[in-house]
Length: 288
Image 1: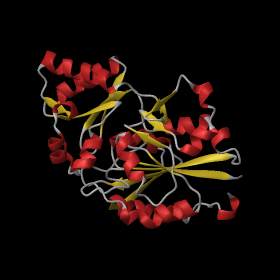
Image 2: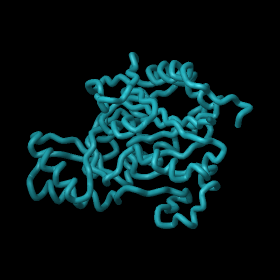
Image 3: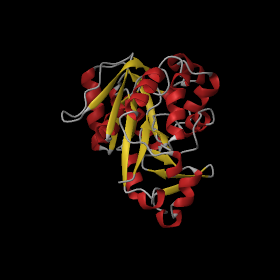
């Protein structure tokens, strides 16, 4: 059976180091995946602008990518040409000239809901809407340009919680009742629509005949380090949890076989991908 392997990877703390955001320690694995025609689809809480800037630097072909924890999938040129977008007008929007499959909620609506609750209950938290670019730099360690790109959230609102766990649970419950959800990332909580990173898998399976018609099956390799990666990791065929400097080891489904890296960030990403590739049957360059 001819199988297409696809990598779905988180960024911060996974492909990118948590503290310095560097990916170069993963270059060998990135190059090996590209040489075997295994797509590397970024699946992150970052914005469209942040990922678009990063992709220009990575040594891999252009691919679709997922932003803001499954809120939207930005299609690559190849994928956009393979799918009949006119028949999918309810799902697809053109944003800045790029076709985007939007699943999440508009950030303006999320912020209106969130900050009205803060005013009503006098809860103690702050989010991106409150912060200047300089404050985002202080909290994330991003460069000025990257912090500006990070501030351009479209489908979510990151925030820091300073109040009690009891009130956080009240906020979480209120979000669920309103059709939203709160997920925990490496630095912030995120208010977003009721979506998750595993939405990528649904998208690929829905359009498999257009995107990968020559393959009989699709198998997903997922890499992540934090709670907002759990849905993606649980649903992948191969799940790699990258060791986190900010959190305890993730526990996935009891029946799930999981690979836990020994190294942090890009180094762990590189080591575990290279090890995994020795155990799976890879397509050769001539097969594509």
